[in-house]
Image (cartoon, rainbow, N blue to C red; front, top):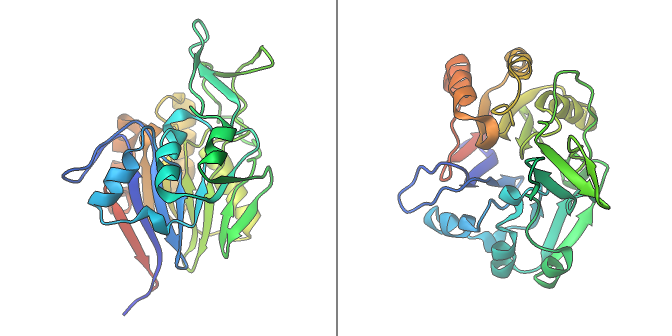
Length: 281
């Protein structure tokens, strides 16, 4: 029997593909690699708890939480999760609690809806890092991702406030991804890819020393991106020898449909309720 080296379960996403499940604007993915369970993001409203029960998954077994960035749709479920799970390490960038906003004409806060102190009382043991960090054998948080491409940009509608000063566009220093080194190459888990998908993949190669990219899952933020960024990113993806592409959440339906037509059976829609098992050989 072949051994599974990686298991993924989508617990929260915009769409849902299971009876009794609930979709929400957000993202949460449970990763099991080398026998260790790591939760990546918590969705918007805590529906990851009910969805996990429908899927037969007990989140008490989660050993660590990774937060990709401070937007509400990736952190809103953390309070419900901590109340259920209890104390555990929470890996994030030091700017997780930055005052993220959108709509410049009428600023609206879209950051994490809870204070650091409130979450620590519930059991969050924050581990902040600007640098890449191996949190489990072969599993890395990206740390701050260098911005090297000319075409990957953050939308002008997204900005942050710092000491009353508006910083536009939002630099998203806190945007992080998860890199899993597998026997088949890199598997990259994205939150919203505000740092740019290409920047993230190239950073993953540099951090891990593994050039092969086996799979990618998560939000790509290509939905609101310019046509130039969409085309350049898609052309880049075509050059990768991907076996799995699960672009969802902020990728946008139009781009998702295009990726599905380009990558065929290698593409998966990855709604809440989706489970994916990868085996050696």
